[in-house]
Structures are given as structure tokens and as C-alpha cells.
Amino acid sequence: MNNKMSLPMQILIALVVGIAVGLVCYFGGFADITTNYLKPFGDIFVNLLKFIVVPVVLLSMIDGIISMNDMRKVGSVGVKTVVYFLCTTAIACVIGLVFANIFNSAGLFPVLDAASAEYEAKEFSGFMSTLVAIFPTNMWKSFTDANMLQVIVIALFLGGSILAAGERAKLCRDFVSSAYAVIEQLMSFIISLAPIGVFTYMAWVVATQGSEILVSLLLVIVCAYLGYIVHAVLVYSLSAKIFVGMNPVKFFKGAFAAMIFAFTSTSSAATLPVSKECAAELGAEDDIASFVLPLGSTINMDGTAIYQCVATVFLASCANIHLTIGQMIVVVVTATLASIGTAGVSGAGMIMLAMVLEALGIPVAYIGLIVAVDRIFDMGRTCLNVTGDIACSVCVTKWEGKKK
Image (cartoon, rainbow, N blue to C red):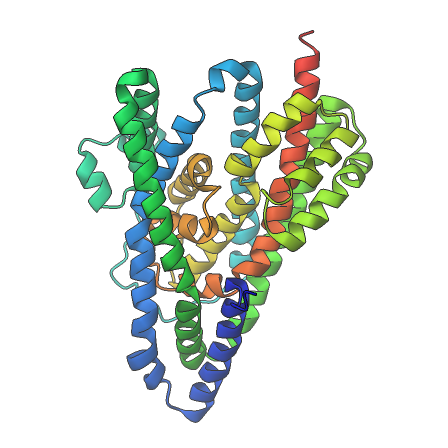
């Protein structure tokens, strides 16, 4: 019998203990103890997160592209599915940014004493300049600078080239699969250290900022869930209505069982059997649902995209950083493209958030705050992701039916 405590429970306990220790230090007047002796351990955890981001994104995206070797066989179904997911993820990013900026403009997100004096906001130099900057001139410099958009482009090029090379690239295929398996193990170890990062950062932030930060965390959760709900209603039910002619009430009623299972299990993969039943009930063809739903559990990250955007604006506010329009466009592009490669990874939300913060040059120091309540975010975003998978399977079935 395995009596080992689950990671979410460990993080919850670390959160509660960290808050308690932080409040004691805050009201006791010895917050310096948390700064000098606890925060450094949180810094180590954040450094490890930053260290793993580039190899995870690079190898997971290449591995994902290689694994989609049968995309030509599935033809139009695969293209429609991927386009649907990328479009809805981009819309999710916009919705997340809109709600986050509304909350931020209303003064509901805090400004903490972050070590961000060195930060200088970069002006948006125009779409074409941004597009040119996405393509790297030096692969190794892209890695060392953690330029995530360039890393994504490198992964797309390398993955596509390995596919094009066919049998001659077998050694490269094996190397990528083997290296990614190693990185997954390393990442699992780093993610297992999350309770330490949560405890130390929560204790430090509460001790130095007081109980106000706890109210701010509640508000950022409310902000994310508003985004989840609006996205589900505006994008998923409307797409079912417009493309399939299905009543939104009927759609949510048919998908309800999978939504509840996803909300409680926080696993798109574990929800697959229930999702297939719900999709079939809503009229999705079995062969299409059998392709779309597993692919969706891998690359559809609408809920995570909203979470990334809300968390990014929240953490930027904590660091007293005001994001420009150009930087928000970078958030949308980065989160949308990265959804292809990192969705199936355990702890993907945390890794992707670190990646987005790196792409913008925002200090990753307060990521422990979001990780502390990540389980609450995860329930909503997994529910939204599964709902999107079902909506996609219904829409693709309709689109393919018109060709017959």
C-alpha cells in the first residue's frame, strides 16, 4: 500500500504552513528571517524552473512533431483539428488578457516590493520587426538567452526536418525520444520540489507584505475563472451553434459529465473515456472523436492559455511592471505556439508560465505565489480544455460530413 502523500496535498500543506509562518513573522516584526533564510531556498526552486524551461520546450515540441508522423494519413481531419485548437487558444489568450487588464486597471492586483528596478519596458517596434525577431540567427544564443519564441521556431524547423528526412533521421528520432525521457524525469524531480518553493515564498511574501497578498490571490483566481466561463460560453457553445446548429444548452448538458470528471480529476487524459461518451451523445463520429479527443488532450490548452495570461499580468503587477501592447502580443503568440509542445507534460502550467515570463523578461521570483494555488487554477482549466476537445470533435464531424 502506497501511503505517500500526493503532490497537490503537499503543496496545499506548504501553502497553509507558509501563510502561518509568514503571518507570525509579519506581526512579530522579524520578517528579515524569511528574507535571509527562507527565500534563498525559493530562489533555488525558481532557478531550477528557469533551467529546465528551454530543454523541455525544445525536446517536447520536437518529440510531439515526430509523434504526429501520421498527420498526412488523417489529412483534412488533422488540419481542421489543429487549426481549430490554435484559433481557440489564441482567442483564450485575448480573453485572459482582457480580464487581467480590467482587474489590474481597477487596482485589484497588488504592487509588491520586487527586485525589478533593472527592468526597462520594451516598446513595440511593429509587427514586422517582431516577426523578424522570432527567427534566430544563432541557435545557441537563443538557448542561452532563453528566447522562447526563437526556441519554438527552432523546434518546429528541427522537428519538420526530421520528419522530412525519413529513415535517414532514425538516429535523430531515437536521440530526441531518449533525451526527452531523461528531461521528463528531471522535470518530475524539479516539480516535486514545488512544496519547498511554495512554503518559502509564501512565508517570505506574507511576512514582508502582510495579509493583503492573500486577498490578491483570491482575486486572481476569480479573474481566471471569469475567463474560463466566458470562453466556454462565447467560443465553445457558439462554435457548436454556428457550425453545427446545436443549442448551447444541449451542448453543455451533453458535455456535463466529462466537464465534472475533468474538474475533479484535473487530467484530460484520464477523462478521455467519459469525453468519448459525451462526444458520441452530441453526434460526433466515433473515428473522428477517437482522433480529435486524444490529440486535444495533448495540444488543446485554452484553459492554460487563460491562466498564463492572467498570471503574467498579475505577476507583472506584483513586480510593478506595466505590459505594453507589444508584450501582450508576445504573450498570445508564445502561449499559442507553445500549446502544441507542452500540454502533455506533467506540471505544464508551471513550466509554461516560467517560459512566458522569460520571454517577456519579467522576474520569475513570484511564480511561487501562483504555484501555491495552482491546483485551484488547474481544476478550471482542465474542465475548459476537455470542453473544447468535445466541441472540436462535434464541429469537425459536421465539417467532414459536408464533404460527403
